[in-house]
Length: 122
Image 1 (cartoon, one colour):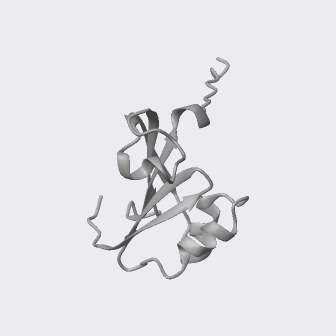
Image 2 (cartoon, one colour):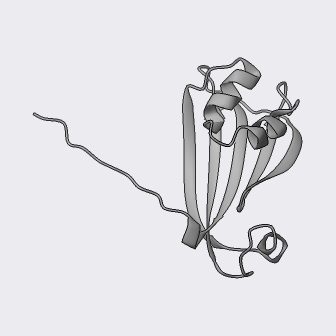
């Protein structure tokens, strides 16, 4: 992966979820957090593509167990130290360049991850 320069970090409160946004050069934030807040029913990937005019070729998603840190307890309306999930997403373009990254924290009782695996017929 080619290195990128972080130009800004922003925090967006989406209902009872916290989204930490990390912006890379040359893109930068230029209003994306406001667009995300005002479009809660649109996939963030779609908003990123529209905002930057760049197609997402790949999203790497890491989901880890964590606890709610004290500074996020109030915005998440959750108790500090209770179970949570942290999701880190890296958005890659067709050249393999990360041009956007987000970190979300979800109270464990408000998030479900579901996966379906299907075997190809032989």
